[in-house]
Image (cartoon, rainbow over all chains, first blue to last red; front, side, top):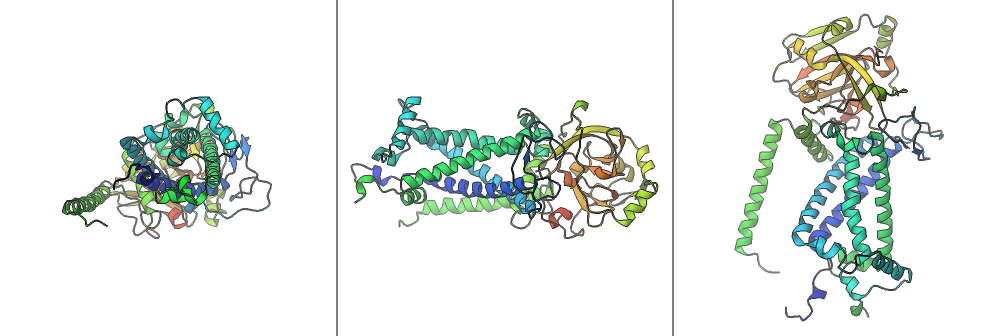
Amino acid sequence: MAISDPKPESPRHAAFVRVTHWLTFFSFVALLVTGAEIVISHPRFYWGETGNVNTRPLFTLHIPSSRGTVPTGYGYVMPDQNGWSRYLHFETAWALVVTGLAYGIAGLWTGHFRKNLVPERGNRSWRAHWQRIARYLRRRPPDAAETRSYNVLQRTTYLVVIFALFPLVIWTGLALSPSFNSAFPAAVDVLGGRQSARTLHFLVSCILVLFLVVHVVMIAFSGFWNRMRAMITGRVVLPEERS
Amino acid sequence: MKPISRRKLITTGLAATAGVAGLAAADRLAQRYGLIPPDHGGLFGAGETLTYAAQRLLTAHSLAREFPRSMISKAPFANETAPPSDEFKRHQAAGFADWRLAVDGMVAHPLSLSLADLRSLPHRNQITEVVCEEGWSYIAEWIGTPLSEVLKEAGVLPQARYIVYFSIQKEWWESIDMADALHPQTFLTLGMNDGDLPVGFGGPLRLRVPRQLGYKSVKYIVRLTATDSMKDFGKGLGSASPEGGYAWYAGI
């Protein structure tokens, strides 16, 4: 096809990005629901190596528990959903890790990280980030360049989520495996102990949920269906195409 | 749509054949090296098999973390158990003088051991953490006979693949593979923190498997069976846990 500007025809997101995006999304939702079920069996968090109902907690979630042995102040016990929740948590953890590895390899191979995620030269300053925040606050619509690629704020956020938060949540999760710890004791020791690892696993998950909420709100602001279509089919309606 | 080129057809065909052959070879290898857990079926079977196979390749011989004496928990938590059976209460009233451990199945010499017999076998101690699937934990010193010493005494046969162990409490039984059964930290535990093992913590006899979650460390052990297959035990899923919806392998 002979088109002077091939850009509008090229997909907004590469196929591997779209596939791994949705695999990550479904794995994350499953991990979140099952993780919440596991927390309900002991909604108390500690710091250090050990912690149980005879130990003073770092903080407590004020929710009823699925175990009668946990003092919650509520007069009832929630149904126990730990069995299937744990099976599904670890199964979807595998799905997430395999997806993440595939994404990482494809991202390096295609130069996706370098081209689309690392902020462009001249944009790697706090000032550039602050300017984009100010633009959001003034509710200015994105320009055509932004419809085709990520702005600096998106780039930095995605880099943090992909290369800091997800590795951290996987690490703190693995640090809760007694068998993994026997082979790699440093994985839990450097986090300050088993209960610290569990608390960090919970806190990093909370930050990831916060990211998800902000991510969806931003998509809603910038045109929910257009963005959904871009992440499903790869095609995007550019501002100049809109009537 | 473009017609599929011959080259593409051939490469796709070759890739598919290689994939199927690869999977079949992987399955044979996994069976041979014992990388498939008894609860490998159903919706969660794939994840469970990946976890168990990965752990067996990574951690067959690694040792659970041990802690200094200063880290022993001041207030360990004895998780609740089902109300003790009448049989258990009779043993408790008699000070566990007649408690016996039967060792049978694929062994050269089936045994029936008293607690005194167990005490006369080589003893070890370890300061390890009990980790519950709910999320809580505590550290204690555990004193006992390594399970491997009892299995050596009974002459466990080379074809045995699992050790199944039963509590005096009905419907409470588990099993572990030989990597965990012969592991130096897997103890038939008789003592805790310089005293006899209290009833709340599984006394008089508990099998401690420190590289797995607490629910594999069954309390009030009365029988061990060596077997090459879990098919004839319960529903064939490996232990009571998968029958109640929990994973058989609890090393995560």
